Length: 267
Image (cartoon, rainbow, N blue to C red; front, side):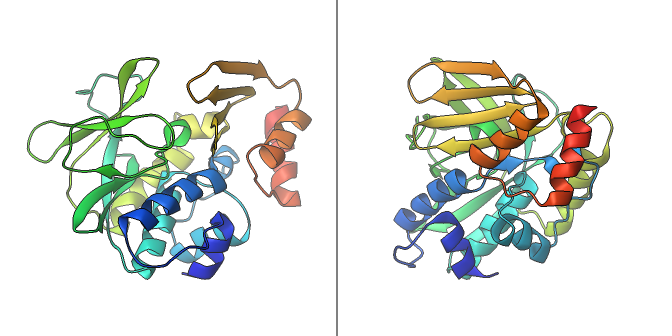
C-alpha cells in the first residue's frame, strides 16, 4: 500500500503517530476526498477486492468505490501507519427496523487507538461517518457532521444510528466477530451482478462536503446542508449527470467508462 500516495489523495500532511486524533482527521479527509460510487456495478463490470486493484482505482485513478473497497483501502492504510484495524461485517438497516433480518452486505472497521477501541466506517454512502465512535459508549457522539450513537443489543451486537430530522434512524447492525478478506467476496459479487441488486439497477454516488452531503440516485441530485434544508433536483440530461460526477463528486472517468455511462444512462 502506497501510504504517501493515499495521504496526498486525501490531503493529509500531519503527524504519522497512530493516535485517536490522527484517526479522526484521516476519517474526515477520506470521506471528503473519495466518493462512494457504484459505477462499475452499474455498468456490469467486475468489482475487484484485490488490494492492488482497489488502491489503483481509488487512489491513483481518482475514482471512488463502495463499502467493500473503501473500508478495505482505509484498513490497509491504517495498518501501514501502525494502527490495529479489524474488519467487521454488518447488516444494512436503512429504512428498516433495528431487528430486520438482512444479509451481511456491509464492511466496517474496529480500530484501536490511545488504548481504546473505535468504530470507523468510511463507506456507508450518503450517511458515511466523518468521525470515529467509541465502541463501548451508548451515548450520542458528535462527529463533524450528524450525531451518531451505538445502541447495544444482545452480547456484542450493536446498532449504528444517526440523528436525522430529530429522529434516531438505524443504519446497520453488526457484532465484533473479526472477518477475513474472503468473507466479503460473496456479498461483493452478489451486489455487483444480481439483477435485483440496487447497485446494478441504479447509479448511486455520494460525497461528503465540509458543510453537508451530496447524493445522486439515478438522475435525482440531493444536497443536504448541515443543520439546514435539503434541496433536490432532477438532472435533465446524461451530460448533466456526467458533469456532476466530475465536478461535484470529483470522479475521474476514463474515456471508456464515460462512453459506457452515456450508453447506460441514455437507455
